Each structure stands twice: as structure tokens, then as C-alpha cells.
Image (cartoon, rainbow, N blue to C red; front, side, top):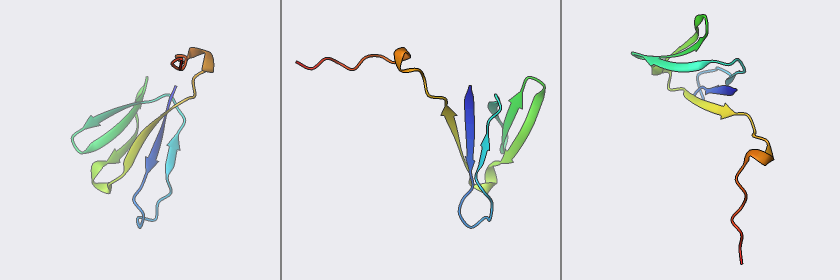
Length: 71
């Protein structure tokens, strides 16, 4: 399940915000909009200069490809 981290620029007096719900991110005009299966749940205007980062959960180590073998 993707998680989202919203980071506000320093000087805005806002704390970074982490969204733990299973949401999708879409863009409409100057807005970043987070949606669930019911519709929009959270929207952020682009003019704030924020950074939105997708954080994927760690995969089980058995799902990862093996390291290349060195000879």
C-alpha cells in the first residue's frame, strides 16, 4: 500500500504530513488531490511549494532479485 509524505517548505510554519491511508494521487489544474474509493479526501494547492513523496512499504527480502554473483 503506498503511503504519502507531504513536506512543506521551511518558513511556512507547517509540519510535514504523512498520509497512511490507501489513496491515489491525481492532479487537477493547480491542485494535488488525494482520492479514495469514495472520491477526493485531501487536496493541496500547488502554489505552496510543497513536495509530495510516495513511500512504498518495504518488500519481503524473498521478493527481491538476488545480488549478481561475483567471481
